[in-house]
Length: 486
Ligand code: SF4
Image 1 (cartoon, helix red, strand yellow):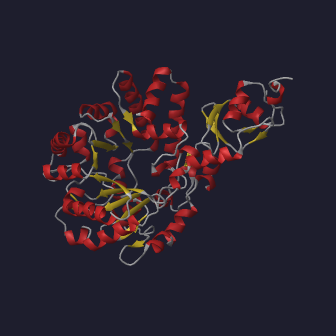
Image 2: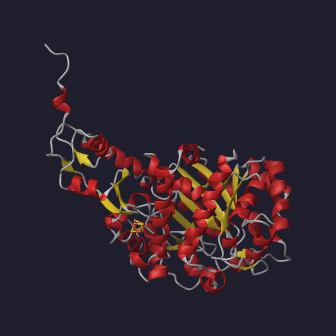
Image 3: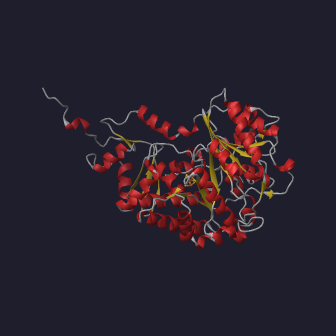
C-alpha cells in the first residue's frame, strides 16, 4: 500500500475556475488584484492565457496565481472560509464604527498660513463665539463614549489648540472622569503649531500621555514663507518649543507633517534634511487640500497633480537614499501603501479606506456644537457649504446623528467596490473612497474618475511604489520593508 497519494492527484487540469479579479494597465504590463488584497504584475500574454484558460497548470506562474486566489483549481484551493477570513482581516477597520474623534476646541489661530484649510479666525477673536463651550464639550464627550469601539482616539484640533489650552485640559480630565465606569481605552493627541507652549502644558501632556502632532514645512525660509505667524518668525518659535518638548517629554515625543505649496516643490532635499536635523524619523508629504483659504489661494500657491507626483517621486527617491546611507527615515504615506500591499492587515488611515473613513471611522465635534463626519466636511462648512453637517450635540442624540441624511448620502458613495471606475480598477484595494472631496471638487459625491485629481494622484503613487518594490534591488526592498516593520 502506498503511503502517499500520487502527485497527479494534486495536479489541476485546464478546467480551473477564475476567481473575481480586476486588471489595469501597469506600464507595458497589467496589474491584477482581488478583494483579498493580493496582486501581481503580469504580461498581456499571461493575462490572455489566464482568462482563456490556456495556462500551463504545472508552471510556477500558475501556482502563484492559485496561491494568490486568482484561480480556483480543481485539485483543491483555499476554502471559502479562509478567503472570508482574509477579507474580514482586510476590512477590520470598519468594525466598531467611529474610532477617531476630533474635537475642534477653537477656530482661533496665531498663524495665518497661506494654505489654511480651516478658514481660521484671528487669535484675538471673541472666545465666546469661536471656542467650544462647556456644554458642547460635555455633550460631545458623551457621544464619543457611546461609541461601540472599546478604544477611541480623542484628537484636539483648531484653529490652534493651545489658544484654548485650559479647555483642552478640562476635556482630558472630564473624559477620564466620565470614562471611569465605561472603561474605554482612550488615546489623546493634540495637533498644535507649538508656538508659545509652556513647561506646565508639557508636564500636563506628560502626565496624561498626550501625543503631539505638529507642522514643520521645511527649512526656516520655507517654513516662514508658508506659515506666517503674528509677530513673525514662526520657525524660531517652533524650534524653541521643539527643544523644550524634547527636554520634558524625551527625544521621540513629536511627529510632524508638512504641506506642499508651489514654493515647496523646489526644495525636496532641504525639507527632508530639516526633518532629520530635528531628530524626526518620519515625514508625511501632504498635498494642498481643496478647502478653505488653500482653495482660494490656488493661483498663488497651487500646482498641477502631475507636478505634485513628480515632487513626491523626487522626495521619495531622496528619502530612500538617506536610508541607504544608514539613517532610518520613513515617508508615512508610502509606509501606509506598503502595509496595504504587503501585509494581510487593514490600516487605520481614513483617506485610504473602503468603505470610506468619512463618518464611519471619524467624527468631528465642532466648537459650535455641530457634528461632522470628517475634518474636511467642517472645512467645507466654514466656507458656507453645510451639506455634511450631521446635526448638533445639543439637539440631537447618537442615532439621529449617525442615521442622518448626510450619513446616508456618504454611504451611497462609500465603497470603491461599487463606485463607477473604482469597481473595475485594480488599484482599488490599496486606494480609498472620498465622497466629501468629490463633492467639493467634482460637484457630487460619486464624481468622474478621469478628471478626479485624488484618483490620478493615488494611482500614480501606488504604481510608483509597486514599481520600486518589484524592480528595486534588495537594498531598496530592505528599506521599504523597514517602513512596514518600523
Ligand atoms: S480612485 Fe482611482 S485609483 Fe482609486 S480605486 Fe478609484 S479608479 Fe482606482
